[in-house]
Image (cartoon, rainbow, N blue to C red; front, side):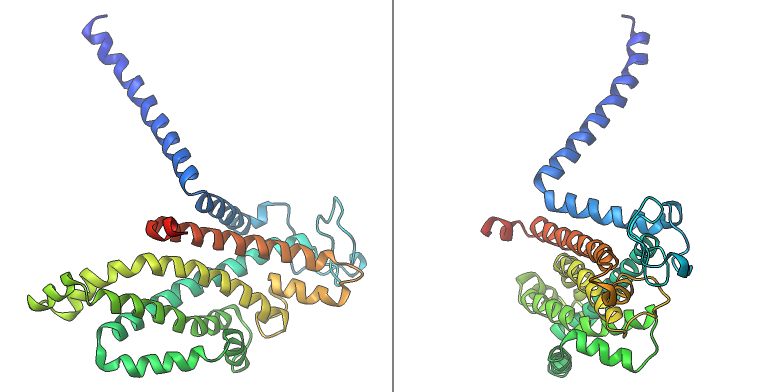
Length: 299
């Protein structure tokens, strides 16, 4: 083989090798972190259903058809119809949007606010006592009752539900971050930075904040799952999103009166909610084991 022929054949071999390496890495990752793979797959599936809901054989989730009310699942209405003739399949698929938006929004907002409060409280001793007593007062109230009380002061909407659940979740995040900060600020490298004259904001940014992100990420997944359940509870008791908005809690609330006649109205949204919460919890457990190998070995 001439040198020119060898050079021409080399790129083809190079193109195949990285693909094999990538497939091997994926298989290794799935084998080492099966909970992350399973939870991530289920969560991505729910996100795909929510995003592409209009293209999955759905109809208008708010369209009324009294002539077709309380029909069992069939080839026309896959999940049946409710008491107003609305297609349950369409309402369940579109309801995924509400639950995912609430869960993701609450996780981001509560994590950001709790991170700030925890950093300030854990590193600045002067305000620690005051802030933590406020957080303890909020934590003494069950989160669902606090969310109901906040929703009673406002009108029902997705935005207000997000705010109410976020306020109830902030104390838990702030106490987690504070505990991490209290252990980190006694480390030798932090004391060395203080002795070297490094400013407090720079110490927090370079030494404290990066070490809080791992436990905060795991906690955020549990907050997302808890927020989805809380939103469903609020909607189920009539204190959450308006009934016209298709959410899993609203669908179950509308079907509870017909539970013995048409159990599918409650069954299908409950199954989707359970699968989504299970996916988020599996993802959180997998991230915990991956980010803290010592804990995984002890278990």
